[in-house]
Length: 260
Length: 235
Image (tube, rainbow over all chains, first blue to last red; front, side, top):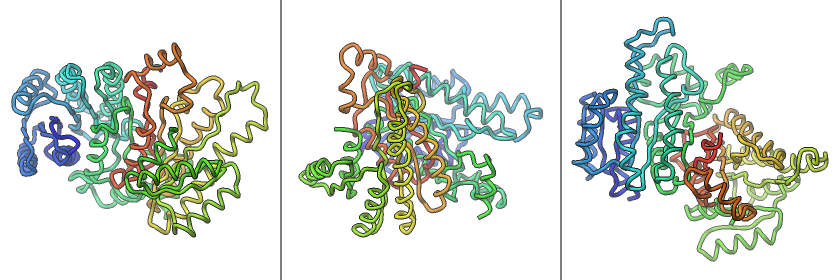
């Protein structure tokens, strides 16, 4: 298996895209450390062990730099140093206009979505560089480029991840560490499945391939970026949205595309 | 080995039957022979994509002989080394016919062959020069940028037919073209590339394989930069 002998760390691995990524990395042979505040992260760990791989689940607030350092040390002791880091954890605390965005919600989204990713990179990249190999994949969003009405914290932090991606790629390429960003569109997670049907229908109509993505499809892209065959890709931003990131509002094409 | 052959080899090794296409029939036949000798499935068929009749004939061949098409890789390009002042209209039109019209209509033919199969994958090989143009390569850079627009428009219109269209933007890859850079110049390029090396043709092939396999089934309209980080380093 291509990732045998490697240790992966996935944040936000209790559910959705993070869980799919963690399971897929394990299927490819990696041992996987899982971080999430949701206790369901233990279930992901159980499923990884059932695949015959080692797993450690830690309930860590990734916005807390000290807690992240401690958790990474614990992971290193149990699984070995982290070779593959997937910054997937992301929260939306408040769906509100810019004016109504509360300080708490803004700080919380910034803390988890951006500071959390930074904390995890900082705690792991030095070891990767010393060993001469590492892969970092940041799960951004199509909202990083297009924005998202009433989710200013989410779209701003997801855009921030792109700057983090470029800089880490630049600083560590010579040390054998690549760093890339994945920008998913609508993906069939629990949250998206729970959206009102009329909103789902409209979003599907605005997606050229006429469906949402599956978490496993995001996981497949992450696995590709972690593998040897992607060794020349670094600092890249890859849309995975069924074409949903294309500007379907421009020149009236949204009307055409949803009118079919 | 050029990028086209690197891609062809990776796709053939993954089990695809590959139609090797280029301007000269003997080049196509030689490469196809080489792949077949290695136990791979390939055939050579000449097609000058600057000629509409060649595109029509390729399309008819794919339909009659293979019943359709699953993957199209638009890799052919004309890249004259010329300042803009020295670019006359004849050269412009020639570059336009290959780099723009050829890719466009080959893609249109491909969509006709893919629709009855419920979908397919078109991969346009653009270049980082589409984003950061090179002097003396204005025709190349300009039409490589056009490829990004073409990719996005085709992705939008053909998504509902299961046809996915993506573009790869390679940096400097170890091909005949790269041999033009020697000594100090190559050293400078490598120093400006965070990964400190140029790419290999098969590394573009692996990305085409990912984009065209079920693993990439939700990826369309995307642009994938494969340049060892060079474009984030210099701009």
